[in-house]
Image 1 (cartoon, one colour):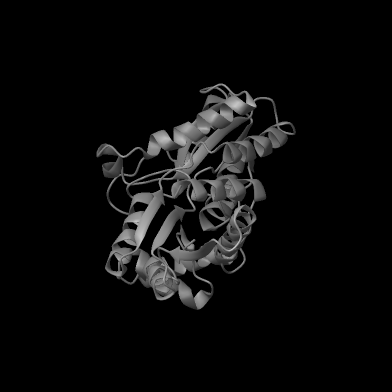
Image 2 (cartoon, helix red, strand yellow):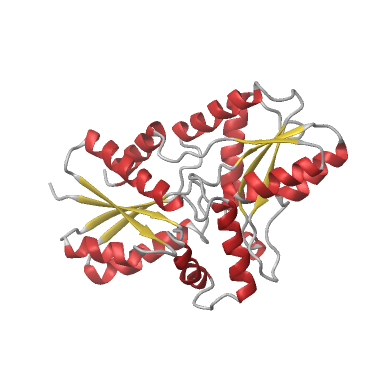
Length: 304
């Protein structure tokens, strides 16, 4: 049988301090950042050790997905990375598949929650790049309630809650998006809620007094982004005096990177401390075997 290409897509990250400027410029659609913005972003990377571990994490996820697919059917699948804002770009990966004679790709994004602004754009870029080569692309749109993913989050959450105050408030977070995207009918908030409800049910948490949804890492643009922002929710928790601790489940992210290691572990943690609240965060999936095995099964089902 013909080999099947698996285009594993992710946001991308600079691999060195020298790559921060071109990376930031690409995010800004070719507009170079001001020296002040560049210095601010560089300082954030410095705060987490100089550079993000995301590139290494993403490569480990690729390697584990390849192992799991090989276990299902050896030599049938070839997993390659395609990144949105760093090399290898999505288009570069598709061209690489084309040179090697692939005619069919399964597109999988390392993000569980569908949005036309994120996963929709990734898969759209893959299909646009594949069309001139006569390559067919099947996309996996969402894995928000994948049982292995829910189990991973719930297991770690339960273990952390067991050692935290009984009044701990759980906050499920994901990357904020412009409000206009949601106003256009995008399902992204419902996708996050589906994950939150599934995990909360597994752990035995009540919505409202024990868990809620917050958004984080909004872009710095004049237009409104969806909220409430996590820092505002932390303030609400402190003002209400109904909890002494918050536990964040950053379930919108599946690897340790800047939005987790800085926005949560440094910024949100410090903000909580200033308001007198204890703070913890559940683990990211990274290259967890069970979750990647489940995603491998989704890949095989996508072309069945």
